[in-house]
Length: 384
Image 1: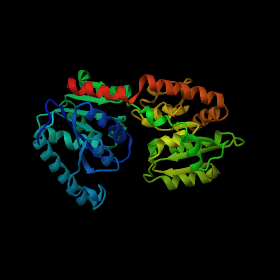
Image 2: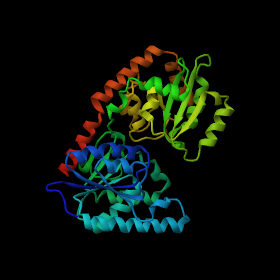
Image 3: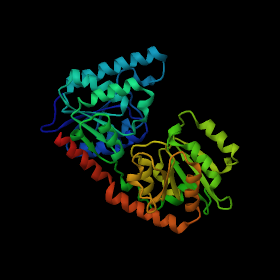
Image 4: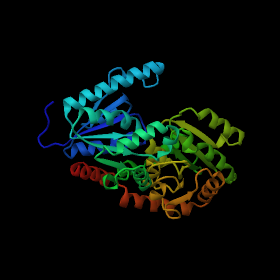
């Protein structure tokens, strides 16, 4: 496998390239790094995913292990074990043949599988990225111990918020090897002046409707149940509606039943997984995220980029993005009355919505633009 002269070879290891926060982040950052002269390959462990083809079209090599197309959950325990073995063998073989300069693991699965293989089969520098709080470790203490042991064998560890960085250090990672790179947003995706009218028409929203948008997969820790309960605080005489966009990971039916029991079914719409999030944001008037835990969510940044005021919880790195009282309103997690009161304040005040939305856009432009994020990765890799 001949290499371009002087190009730094980066191997990204991740479970799959399905639509999600970390995956969407890579889909935006990696093409910029490829254009900047880095030679990049992404090796998935469980399948290519919806974002693989756009990445490949942008000049990023994407590889998946043989037999992964059937999906990571099919075939029971033995089937999953066989696929994990094939994925590990394929990854080890590729590392030996391609000889990357840096191997970078995104998310716990790739870290636990890929880091030991990199130690055994590659002389590359090793980096890991943690993009969430470590709450998951409480449910998997053995895996937590393995992760903490691996920290000492990494040349660098990245967090996407100060909250995540602090947890990595508390787990025993060498502070001198821990770095912070916040997520970045492609502002051009939120600059179409015609998008609002078109998107609202597509959603069937009346001109006077006040649309509250939550972009988050239907996972318990995203707090959708709290959000449904919070709706009781909103004024019934105003034409607000809640739109929830995201993949159903098994709780959609329960959430619909909860909304029905609260008499809110007519005001709540579950849109499923969507590829047109910028259009949904253009149609909306308020962004909301009720998570119990977060690293540094793209959903909040994208809402701010779309000039929406944001109501969110003080979870993880969210307060590093949302300035309470300036770009949005923050409440404690698991507090539906406080969440509802914050939403009610914005629903009833169009001037406040506009002012906070403008301040949020300005903050994204100044602090969280995608070009700045990609440049930070380029500096990181060159330094490593």
